[in-house]
Image (cartoon, rainbow, N blue to C red):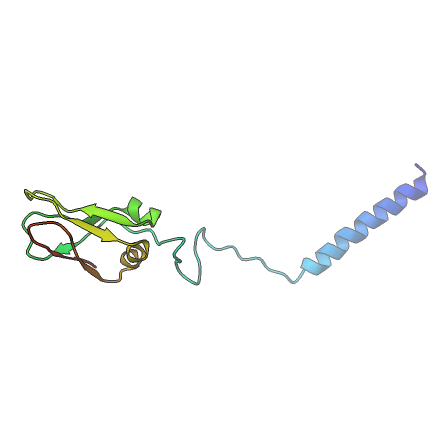
Length: 123
């Protein structure tokens, strides 16, 4: 390779670097914290929350808890409410309802199971 060719390569490289620096001279880059979004949470990424325990009407030992792991999964849920009671009830929650509970919205649903029913309320 001739000296003339080497000089041209060096000149091109210097020109490219100078052009890039000129273009980026007025640009600032801002990085936000991981996972933050100005638009807020979406159905595909529920906000992380602690376990939530429901209030159960006419309660006699039943317990309804959604764990933080269940919130993260954002799936439909079937909760068993037996607790210390001698019988069980179940509560069906859709993925949308789980997301609403995670966001702090109040969800009240009647559980299933004999010999009676209870109203289960989150938030």
